Image (cartoon, rainbow, N blue to C red; front, side, top):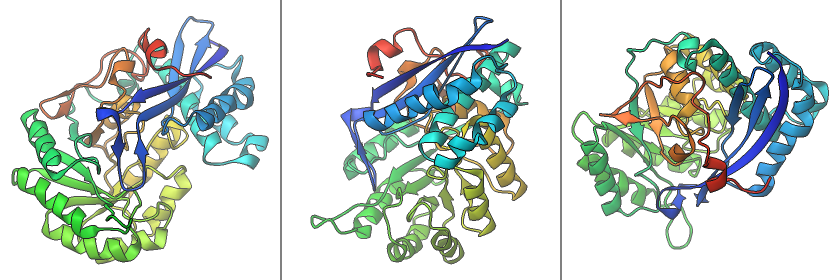
Length: 376
């Protein structure tokens, strides 16, 4: 089997409620710049990354796929995924201009598509190709009811709705600001307390600052979060601050979660070595695809740390990876892209249904590009 062509696409999918906000961002659409890799066997592998639907930067990613990586792949056997990963990652001109960012996101889309092809060629869903078992239970936790722009009443209503659907774990955003634009941790703690009161005693509540707090705020608010029974504090401060996260991990009793803004195995190595993280939230579409994600998951597992994938792919690839890797027992649920896929990830009574189609779950519905595609 040989690669014959690469065809890029960009999807901009509306988010829940028309717009959402967290501690650092406001978005109305989720972006998915990606690639369909065609083969002489008639199989097509699909992969993509996740963005905030900024067309100019999305085009940079698809241009990198077409013009920089594409010529390195034509004529290759797509099943040789790890060898191709190294070929792309170590290609001197591309290595010179970026080992993270645009080139890394483009590489992620390609690697996901190659693993999709490899699983299709084997006639297996990716989770089984990677060694997972069909009887595994993967718990879902919901984030889509906890955005920062929601009122306390909306947060509680969304929490009660998720409980009725069988969820036992939810996450809400923190990073509130007052009318002058200053951080308002007291408001955040009020929001957390409202949701905590709506959960049963065995319900889990996570909070996510999306890097909005400074270290002093994180230390102050983090101590109060412990009294509210928060399961983890996610991205409390700037994403790359290893010493700051290490201090929080030492001084707070609430565990630290992070990883959605880390792009390389080396970055995760540094956080883990510093004792700066308790929950590793590796993202296959921020890292260079399935290949690098698996290496990060193995590193975390070797340090006895749980892996809870960030949901930049809106559950598709990460569902397969979480079912296959022993470090994973929990996966985030954000349903924005479910109308894009032939076999969307589904949650039943608080757990993900195990997908059955061959591939990585990334095959697009026939109408996805017509409904959500934007100009290349």
